[in-house]
Amino acid sequence: MHPRTPAGRFAAHGALLFLLPFATGCGPGAAGTAAVDDALAAQIQAARLPDGLLDSPELRRIVDLQVARDAEGLIAQLADGSPSVRARALHALASVQDSAAVPAILPLLRDPEWTVRRDAALALGQARTGVSASALLEALEREEGAEVRRRLTEALGKVGSAAALARLHDAAARPGEAAERMLAYARFGIRDVHHPA
Image (cartoon, rainbow, N blue to C red):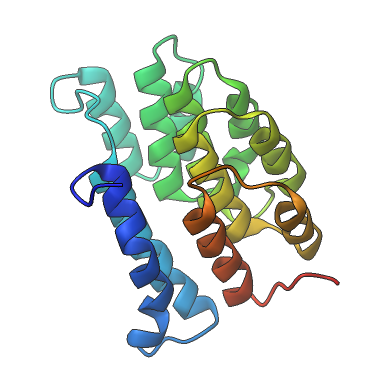
């Protein structure tokens, strides 16, 4: 992976993100998790493909809803016919982090558009509560897209239980997924979730 590509930047910074809580003095626990998540969210935003945000009134409206932290308004956008609108609304919901949105987000793990599935996984990982690790694991098992698989693995690290950790550990990783798996395992550990065996 070349360090100048979005995927290369993600992989190159993965190791640094793992060490970030310790370097900042946060250590394991909620504060350490927040530091890692903030750094990773900034990296995800940098790697995001352009979606015409500045040129589209529909997408700017979603940003306005995000700034207002209007989860209900953002949830309404998830039914839009445009994949760009659905994906941007999910990205905004990841920022808002309202667990009440989880039931509306879960079905979008089966959306035909990969960008929507990717941002649904991101939003579920940020919601923290009410997320079904089983739904994330099932989505990971059927997902073919590398970016979506990365976000699903990330979400599992943020919300999964010990049973989910065991299932993730037992599932075969695809080529190129080792870094994402290690980062997910680190997130489990930061939350003091350990393999049950």
